[in-house]
Length: 496
Image 1 (tube, helix red, strand yellow):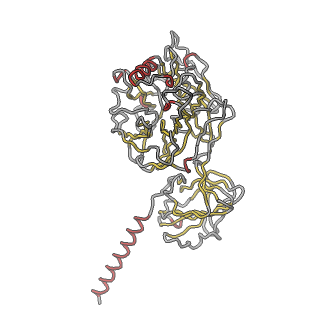
Image 2: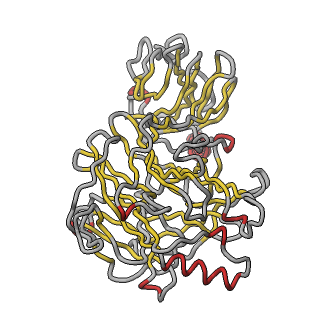
Image 3: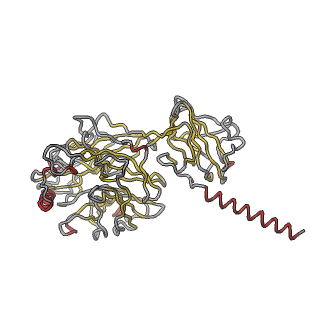
């Protein structure tokens, strides 16, 4: 009898272990990361809901920065803004460009050999520098006279990098365990270190104003490496680059030290669901906790006017979204709707909108600083300015009812903390949260009837139930959440 009991116990423990392994395999990681609905990572099923893209609102004062000085009045500047909320203000770095002689890409020769020489001549006539401005409110910018870079015999300007032939790009600030002399960093597109051809080299600064070159160029050529992000989970830098030439696509490179980069790998390309003539211009990335978000610049090429010999230089650029959980496999989101559109006819951004730096969170808003262009891509006959668009944090995509009501059920996950917060707009309705077990059965005391519904608009609204203030009694257990919405928008949830 004792042997049978021992055998039964062993079988029972084996079954329990098997069920635990199965549950673990089916359980996603949520932790304390914000769960947005840009992809289906956390979503098991939806009923009566749709996913809707939320466009940022362009500021009424646009453009918020224009070329007023001789060093920033070129056809490609001011452009490529990169901003940080730093030292109690918005600090903005941007590209100031002018040409010493006129030229247009779209008027270049159809003969490939002649065209290469013409484009090289254009680039040789281009002076591209990095300028600096700052603002207390994010709208009105001052351009301080810094006394750093000489421009035609004077240092009374706002230039912070001015080496001939360089293209300045996104500025990032590191704070943890970093050499104080390298607290700010950027990658520039340089000629000098590459024998007259373009490649990349890092620049570093202790204050964002005084910059020095890295000891050596990057290993690996980063085509248009305007943007990069440090991934704290993989402990590496990721740069999405403009990759390929016919058509332009998006590629990926990674680095552990910001100097030695991996070989280029294509990760995202136009497909059959994109209109003819679609190409991917400069990709811009950021991380929202463990989610990669890409602001994908969509280049809509078109033939242009009669006699145009270079149709792939003509067209407009707007922005869509893509997401990834590993930086390698990317998905287009929100039905490929336009996230940041071109302006209407006659506006400063009617032809192209682009940004190399991610948004800045300031005063309860995400601030997107972007290049706005009026005039064809590839032409020096155009005007540029820097615009501002705003969006409330994490509100890139909403789940909302098709009619009045709908619900979303999550995949199973382990409760990491008792406090559940919801980012939702329910001022015209309600959002209520039910708690289920891994198999979908409602947990006692956490039903819809027990829930205290959210009926307001807020970024971090706490949830609760009649007999439970929070989820602390379920900490460590595997659950599902069911969000029931009535005339409301749900943007994200997270635990703290």
